Image (cartoon, rainbow, N blue to C red; front, side, top):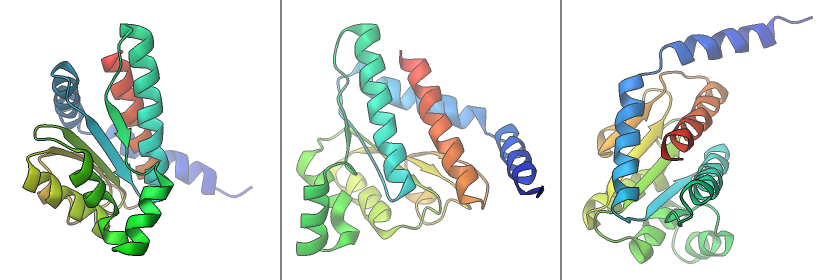
Amino acid sequence: MSSKPTEYISNLIATLQQVNVDEWNNACKVIKSKIDTGKTIFICGNGGSAQTASHYVTDWQKMFYLKHVKPLNCICLSDNVGMLTAYANDIDYNDVFSMSLASYAKKDDLIIVISGSGNSKNIIKALEKAREIGVTSLAILGFDGGLALPKANHSVHIQSFDMQVCEDIHLSFGHFIMKQIC
């Protein structure tokens, strides 16, 4: 039997042990403050990160409502296939999140971007649009943080160059937040 599964698990555990708990707690405070003030939280990502963004919204909205019997204003910008493909086809794929954010967001809302590399152009443009319209940004990143790290107001940075390890921990972060807000 190959040692690959053991290597993966060892790498995942080692990376989890290096998680910056202060970053996670700070991100949680930012998210809670937006919830407490009735702001809208927008979340987006590409590929596996799009699925993670959708998972965050699913868990957070359902569990928040069950616990507090009130809605949580949380929208996954990656979930609207019609909107994504319209912007991608008619404008540019690099603008799919920034254009949606410009259409929906108000000053002091929150955008959470999720990216393994932190270099996706549509993520960078979303962060730039957020700054332009006064939306707070939180980047959930891997690798070296890429171009997104310095553009975000807040970040959770998983320092690993293994995409699957980053994706696993990004999903764990979403579960951590759910347990804090519910």
